Image 1 (cartoon, rainbow, N blue to C red):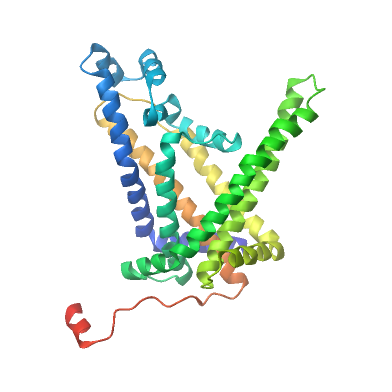
Image 2: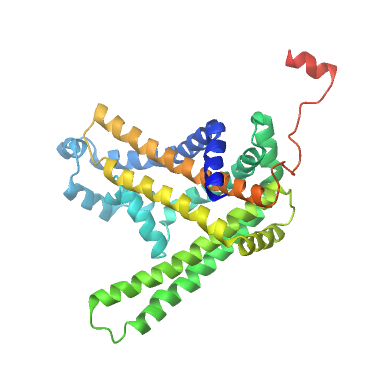
Length: 333
């Protein structure tokens, strides 16, 4: 059942690949104004100086250090960690070490979260139906489910906040300090830190999986209560732990494979011209692949849930159809 759900997930994503492309395009458009703003500040700082040519030809560490020291607001995000695979490692490090994103990015992250909450209803609706629902069906489902999913997102945000605000400091500021107080070998301290990272990672994944299945139950069963959907998701995890863990492990292995490929293929810094645009295209291709994998997580989990609870025939509200009237027929022609 695990393999079947994993394959079914890829089939559902492939059948609705246009939706994945649309989500990626919306994400790009959301980030484009802020990227343009940072670019304008860089151009203003360089002006028409001789150093501008050196910066355009490649990395200039002296200039970059000077720019970073003077940067404010959104410009503080323009650091060497944005280059190639370093950006992926920096994101992972921020999660494990509970380092919050720069304040300048919080508004963008909030807008992205709101956009994702809206689109996820239509995406899950499409994956559960396993047939085209067209634009009107997609946006009808997204609008109908938005406030339910928004309440669930708020509950998930509270759970994540408790985890990062209380559990993480207790693990790494208190528990780790207690167990390594008398340790004199640095390697032993390192392994203890890895152990606590594993505990924190398990807690993080548990919340993530529970929220994912809560979204699925809320959409597939047309539930109204976000708390009820979360309780039902926890019951599903409790009664089917091996299948849920097995599917998540398989999806996780696919994600690790993608990261491994990106670590080898991720481009560095190149000068202006065609190569710069090829580097940009490679980065966008990686982001699209990561988005497709994120959607596959939801699609495969939806397939697993439907297979277990006999929801192969979709149980939520029907797709909104065009009104049946002579006028509608004339418009359709």
